[in-house]
Image 1 (cartoon, rainbow, N blue to C red):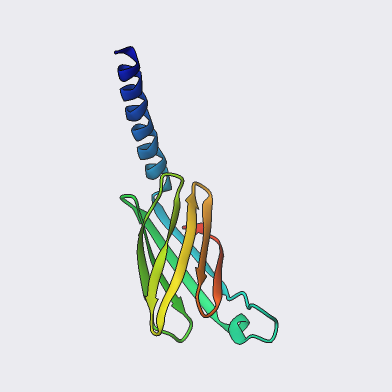
Image 2: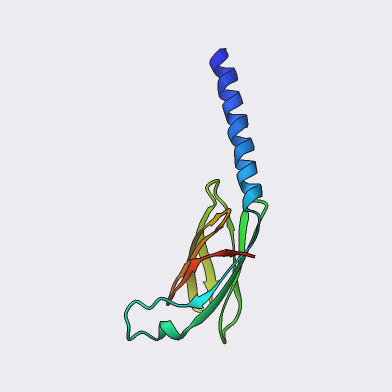
Length: 123
């Protein structure tokens, strides 16, 4: 009987901690930069991308736009550790989205025809 109460208390405590962590991560984050080419002769290094992420209610909602192209988006669940992962639709398929939100900022990576990303700044 005692172990049941202890287990229940642990579950409630972990739930509260997850809620606190999620609340601390809420906000807006951004990254602006150029693609990381697979090799030096690739034209990806000339492509500039802007990524804006809003974290709210346990979700990472992102808008990203390569200069001169259509704006795209993603809406992914945020794990308890601040990570998120999934795909976003682009003109000719999908681009893999992976990142992590931290109190200081975090990181973002978009991997498709080119690789974009780096450290996020909290805005």
